[in-house]
Length: 267
Image (cartoon, rainbow, N blue to C red; front, side):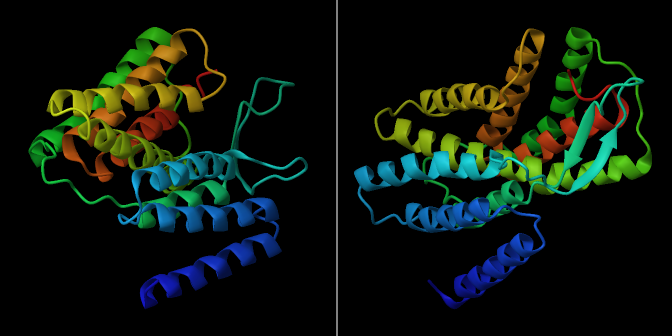
């Protein structure tokens, strides 16, 4: 561990301890975050043989997912905004600041930033940029047609609050988890046994699309296919650009347009 990593570790530890003290982060999740940092630090090392890397992967994936999603009974993250439900009904949507998910996302972003392989195919930057611009229109358009979303603009204060949490917590955490842990490693695994570049890109893309739908529990009916389309296009943006910025930006734009102007959430 170099000096920079040591300083970042101390800052992270201080942040986590502070959040636990003010009861904005469960102690068990804080311990889990330390485990995520430890496993990710070892997982990124190239000197380990494939069996050790596989073992670290099988430990890191469930731990990272658990830390990001687990909320102990009786604990609630700080509530940032709430959308009123119908008269006499509870709020239809509440947005809390999930610090465990956000910290886990940035931990993996820093520790697992991948090195590009020499034989990786990458599209021109202008193709990736145009894709990020037009793909949200496709996803939102399909969602409106299939799910019957209605015009429902939100106040600017709520739009800004949602944007901050969506970008810094939801989009970073989910995209780093899916692209760095799954799509990138699956691509390398397929490349080690298949020379066909199309297979190297398509197989991980399809598998990670399935994972994206699977981690969004509670989906049913047409919503499953809308999420599958979104997950596929998020993954395709990474396939094209090999840069985490593209799926994060695409994911953020879809979430933000949906929340800001349409009925939210889907259910």
